[in-house]
Image: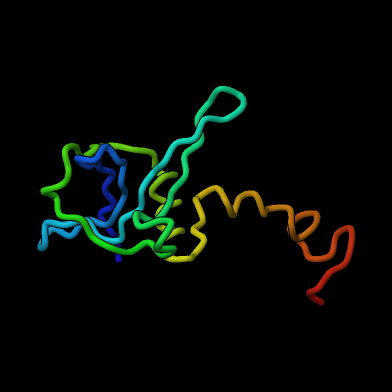
Length: 119
């Protein structure tokens, strides 16, 4: 099932990410984005459950009445990290399998240098 993931700015000023429910006019499974400065002068983003530190699971819902801005676009990496955090699954990207091309040894054959687990 594909989810419509939305990044919104709440009336409190928080940046929140969640699954849009059109029929209920709500965003469910809310995560909040917090930024932290790094030593190199940049910024690191943290994805936390909205109820943190009292809740450790990404749950809950917020009515769109509490939203002042909906971002039209935001990085796909942020969507992927949200889906991983809310589902406890690791998602692969299209390039992940290409990095494994030489894992089978020369020419993709099992064995190569080292130990082969497949005989």
